[in-house]
Image 1 (tube, rainbow, N blue to C red):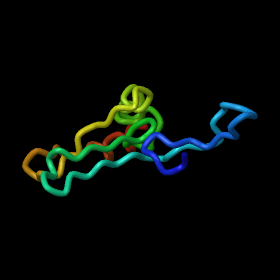
Image 2: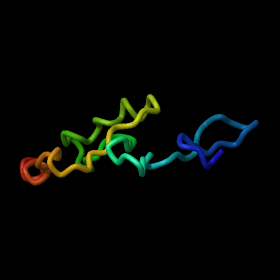
Image 3: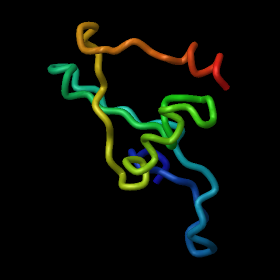
Image 4: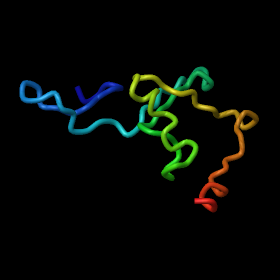
Length: 87
């Protein structure tokens, strides 16, 4: 099944080895945006060694999702520029 949330691509009857999988999962609650969830395989930081480079991996492996924060008052300043400068 290539259309479900945890879809992968394998050849049934030949192998169970997955050849591909989703790059991200999103579940949007259009009635209550605060209940929306998302996840990426490793983390939201594309910089190796960054504070968020692998912080979502345990959730991803467990088939779980992280909250989507869309309220500007709840968001915190990103330290990406500091991290890039120091690494």
